[in-house]
Image (tube, rainbow, N blue to C red; front, side, top):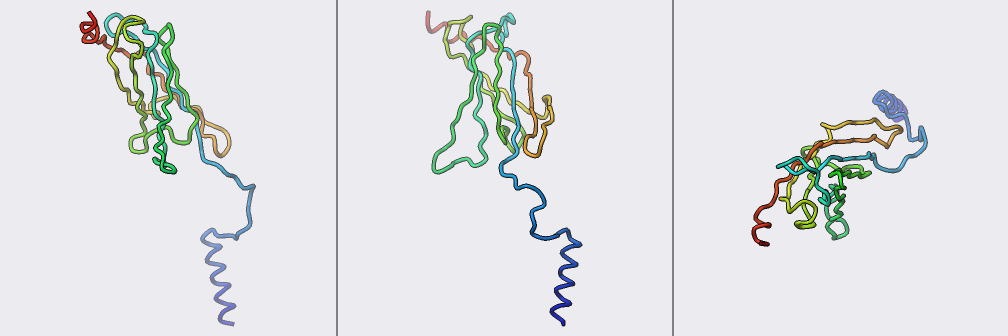
Length: 166
């Protein structure tokens, strides 16, 4: 009798705390929340504001697991600026940003030398997706689209490279 009363008391306590049983209430879902991340902008010459073609703009997506199966993840995503200096990077991921400060580092470098308006110094941008536009997602797993438009990325000419070539 004491055991039976204890069972009823425990069942009542668990029910009051929100544990209703082990039955599946809805369909089982597998996966991780994910979102689309987009970084777009335009690369221009800081001196005259002219667009620069052929500039590599890229990032390394943050991987929560770091080293996986003994291999360091080095998946470098990049885009080249077009004739108008415009670029767009996009990634569907569950965690593109750095967990400590919600940013992703974007690396900008001139890879074609003096071609396309001269040689330019490399730069790094720290993109904070909280400062961008967010289009909410639908469903339980898709968290929407985060877009950051960095407008004009101004690069300085690398005069040391030009002087050494003369």
